[in-house]
Amino acid sequence: MKDILNKLSKLLESRIRLGIMSALVINESMDFNSLKDLLDVTDGNLASHLRVLEENELIQVRKQFIERKPNTRYKATGHGKDVFNQHLDALEQLMKKK
Image (cartoon, rainbow, N blue to C red):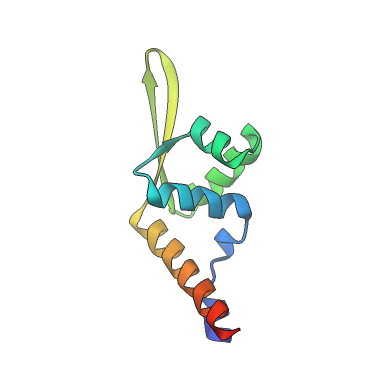
């Protein structure tokens, strides 16, 4: 049981960070407003969670301008996908132990 628990990522214990990674793993990329609407969170709350994921290299950020308006897009990195999948695998293993 301890082995399984050790495979859970502390970075994904938050509902919001887990939601961000879920969205980014199934989509090639998403912009800030799309993530905000999907997760129903405030700008500041989303920004702080995105920063944690970026600092830990689970996501990459691309800033650009579209028709003179700033647009920030987020994409799961290979490392981020690995961490996410390992986390899900551990959760599945825990559920099977029940």
